Length: 223
Image: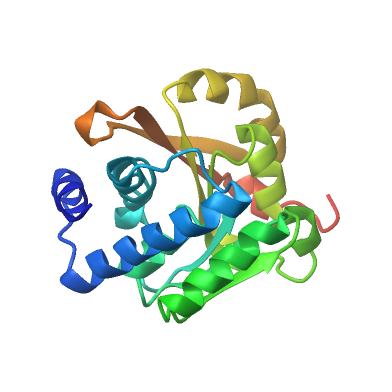
């Protein structure tokens, strides 16, 4: 796995430390162990975990900053948030998923890797709208839900000037087109799409960057 991680990271312009690699390898060990009981992922080979889960997650790294307060919605087995936390230790992060077994696994990994400044919370996105309103400067999702629903769920949680980043597959353009009307109604716009191919030709993915129009922040309260 180490070779796959080092090679994959170099392809996206990252240098992983020995500690980063050890943490990612231990994450993989725990993922496979728990997966045998809980069916957390269909990806079980070391090289595929390294590339399809970890390197894919780390494509977000240039767009998450130390000063951010990050939320990952529908975080599943902790992808992308735990790989990001491993290489972004200063960023405060909240991982949210509705499925108890997935959150229990994430909490176990967080304890095992001794990660600080990250919490795993069992909840639906709707449950956060009051207690976490306008809290997060960056909100991410990976294979969580369709784009328009992600934006509608994330919008009340986004701080002014914040950004949404949706991790999508090769069909991102089609999904954006299908979501265009809803995004405009919500006061959001797609500002950029970054498309990339994973190492070893393991898939074509896209990061979709979404921000609120200025008019969305100027809406009267309650609208």
